[in-house]
Length: 326
Ligand code: UT7
Image 1: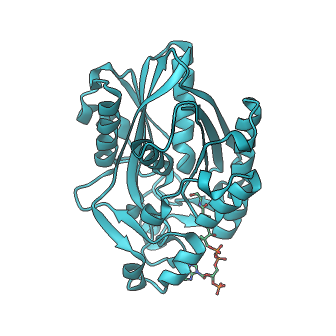
Image 2: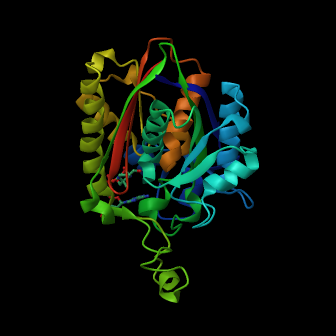
């Protein structure tokens, strides 16, 4: 039984926030942000736009491309760190918006690696015969949990969503493998301290001590990110008897241009085979890889038989890879 990507979609807020505009918010510069991260601008959700808004639109576009009706979907897996509500799952809200009446729907929490983890879960459902058509979505409105007074973090993130339809099928085009990893000993290097059971949003200290915002030890995370993405990529190549020269395109999680370049260099993947769009969107966490994949797909950058490697790293730490024969 093969597992095939039959549709991709993405949705982004219309509002663009440039580095020049950030210079007016915090003590930063376009020069610092560009050289340290590669980011030039990011998209920011408007009032009345939520994680489910972008998730549903990205999902709708992926379904349209796949030629799959919402009611044919067996399962919706939505990865996010910024759900509409702590409960119910944003996936259930998206199910309602799309009219995917026959789907089971749930959210998945694996931070920036959530989309790859979602692909991995979906792969198991499909290969076991438990589902035939699955919608996987990564959607984030990070602008609502970013501290707009903290220059260390607020320049990095953006909002948006990406989605794929994964189907059980015959034929050559196939998801070859997924690999997922977790290293919980570093959970406190990148997290949102408040709003859960440790520092409830209902406690005034949570707000007074600014615990509702993303906090990150950027430098430490950087070093782990490069090592972990290399490890996840090598695992994918080894499992399929491939070498880096076999890879047609590498889509890494879009967190920092320097992390991406260092990972590609360690793997021996040259810049022509590396896809980046973080200059436009910043780090959109679990949405970053599916947004990039949709752009790659709609631009026709992949031909049948091309090997596509996707690799992610983020809070948890959670990291992983997915390898596709296009
Ligand atoms: O999504 C998955 C996980 N996330 C990541 O993978 C992100 C990983 N980390 C990073 O991308 C980088 O560590 C950052 C972009 C966050 C920071 O870059 P860095 O080269 O590691 O800088 P740094 O944290 O070592 O800071 C260097 C200096 C500091 O000043 P001092 O202490 O040297 O005087 C910072 O205060 O840069 C300062 N700085 C800024 N300056 C201007 C930090 N943020 C800014 C800013 N504008 N926005």
